[in-house]
Length: 137
Image 1 (cartoon, rainbow, N blue to C red):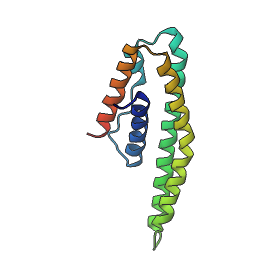
Image 2 (cartoon, rainbow, N blue to C red; image 1 turned 45 degrees about the horizontal axis):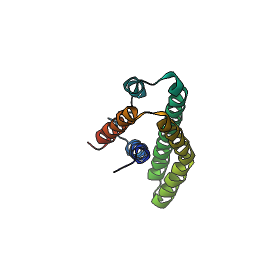
Image 3 (cartoon, rainbow, N blue to C red; image 1 turned 135 degrees about the horizontal axis):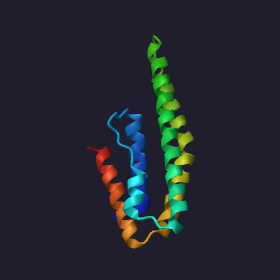
Image 4 (cartoon, one colour; image 1 turned 90 degrees about the vertical axis):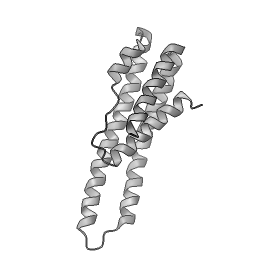
């Protein structure tokens, strides 16, 4: 059985891969719908917003990484002898730059999960499963 934390990690990884691969039909999670489904209580709202904000910052960073990688790829392909090894190294370096943002997002979601009741946890798991499924269709 996959833990809620592992499900979120899979979702973030899948989003990163989909964006990096240029998935044009990528549908990002609708956190407003998740909030409504969870029926976030006032004492949970601040942490929910912190988790969503951290996730959005991580996703924005991924988008910037993709733009940088596309630029680097374009520059390399213009060379008579493209250096694909340097391209892969640049990709790894840019991905490493986003790692702290995903760590922060994960930590904020873990804090939120601690505040959720069993019904809310089941809803959140379903939401994550649904989005992971969409990424791999």
